[in-house]
Picture 1 (cartoon, rainbow, N blue to C red):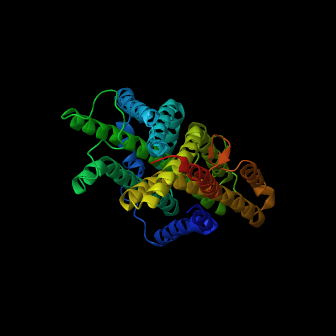
Picture 2 (cartoon, rainbow, N blue to C red; picture 1 turned 90 degrees about the horizontal axis):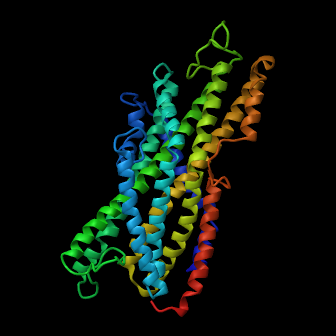
Picture 3 (spheres, rainbow, N blue to C red; picture 1 turned 180 degrees about the vertical axis):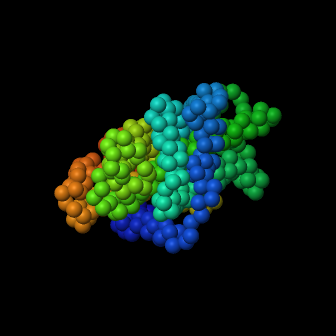
Length: 432
């Protein structure tokens, strides 16, 4: 099985480029259509993300956020405790590994939830900057509005897909024991999802039913935290990509004007979409500030995602291999769904990270082209932008060590398969 996986991953470049090319084709098709600006504002772009973050206590300046944050943290800490206890008390190594993929998801949820709240001082100015960009859009040209709406629409589609994937995984994970018991009562006993070890006897009725419902509520909290934070991060990165494309549009229309009035540059207001040097430089510095704030706030979250996804891939991959050998295809499909759900958002992180770097490189190209085609004595200041963009390109990192890109995602897949092959090679001494 592992050899087949490696054979498939030799074509990883093609595997990764296919969804990227598909998404970019959708962007091109959307750009050919007439884009409506009616009702397109900050609240439209943020969509359900704001509601989700409010429910888990992570939206700045909203009511009761501290109470909701503590409540959701208590739910996740309880799940973390019972699943950790379950792994410690489980005698079978195979069953231990089977439970690890659930534990890794809970750990990731707790870490992301805590870090997001801890970084409120950075998240708040990010949200305010996005709100300001939408407010300043009122007097802009149709082309700039089209760019903003296009990226907002694409972000909304992707976040919907993530929410649907997480929701389906939640329903399957929660109802799987009930469905299996109803279909095959002689083979499967009714138990809680992944059979955690509670600190009390939870097998007798009605305690069993009450605990089942409570665990389902706790699982909903975990899924809501997971999906809300993922969608929020993707929303912010997509907005930055849209702003870089707006900047590229401004630079392509640059005609050598230093500022848009004959008065002092210091007295000139900055106009979104204006192609004078003053507005271009201001917009460029503003984007760099937003991306720098984002990276400072979420680089630990990105690193935690990569580490946890590696452990999750290894543990659930081991379980999938074991289920395949046993011919248990019902459980096999369920675990494949869990694997795809966890890795889909990581792939989107890497894809939008690549998109951000691509847009940053386009800024340097646009500045250099304008330097060649307009008065060089006036436009030589654009060389400063070219140099800054090349020395410090726009990117997001994982722990300040790894740049989020499709190349990193490919390396993650290769490394995870390598670790999985080691775990599978050691499984023969254990009885399932």
